[in-house]
Amino acid sequence: MEESFLSGKSERDLILLLRSLQTRKRKIYVQSWLLQGYICLVKSELIKRLKDRHHQGEPLVTEEDVESVADMLVES
Image (cartoon, rainbow, N blue to C red; front, side, top):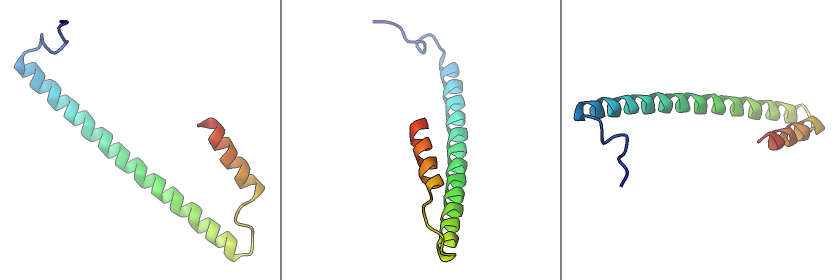
């Protein structure tokens, strides 16, 4: 059986590695949380603009909107 890279580490090193990984995980969680907040803000703004457009009698979906969605689908 192959030795893992962890088997050669001392308990102290393992504890330090664990703490480091937990810190990285927390930072990633915070970044994810912030990005989700930004996503919600952008969605809210888009919805507001669509409602405003509708109240002004403009079409909800334009040719430009369809092209934008098509471009996003191609890119993903």
